[in-house]
Structure formats: structure tokens, C-alpha cells
Length: 121
Image 1 (cartoon, one colour):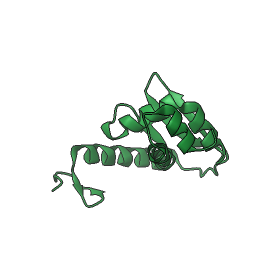
Image 2 (cartoon, one colour):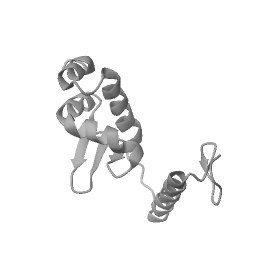
Image 3 (tube, one colour):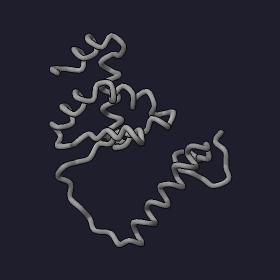
Image 4 (cartoon, helix red, strand yellow):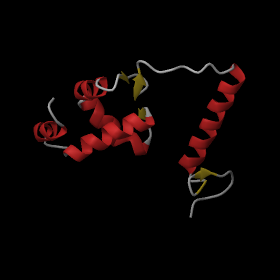
């Protein structure tokens, strides 16, 4: 693949901007799920053109993994620096991330923060 424009011309369904936005979403979010409505279109676009996304991400030293059984695509850096966290800290972070995601999904947000018991306006 030479460019997103060439890929867009060949696909006929997506624009170059669609491919750029999908790549950016995967890079920033690191994991996209088919089951999440806000990820669904991007997930399918990347899945349909997985080889091209793998080539593009390879330039950044990032591997793109497709997990068809669980329907997610992940971007994982190859040469990341690892910070060792205790099990307790890791569990706390994972719990907070899950609570945040659930509240965001339900619309319980205040600005950019998840707030228990509130509904977005």
C-alpha cells in the first residue's frame, strides 16, 4: 500500500479520511471491539483491510492483532518500556477502568469524567 488514498480508490466504500481516522482510533484506543457501537464501523473497516493496517502500524513498531473469537482488534507496541506494578495496583487500575467504561456507556458523565448516579445532559 502506498497511501490511504490508493486504498480508498480500490475499496470504493471508504474515503482516505475514513482509513486515517480508523488508524488514529486504533493507535489511541489500542483496542477496538465489534460489540461496542462506537467502535463497530472502525473495527470492520480495519478487519477488512487488516494487512494494510498491519503494514502501516509496523512502521511505528506496533503489532496489530485480530482476535476473531472475541471480536476485537488490538495495537500492541513491540518495544514498550514496562513498568512493574504490584498486583494490588494493577487490580485497582483495571477496576477503575471498568467502572469508567460502564458509566461512560450508560451516559453517566460530567464533562469528560464519569460520575456515579448522574445522567449526561
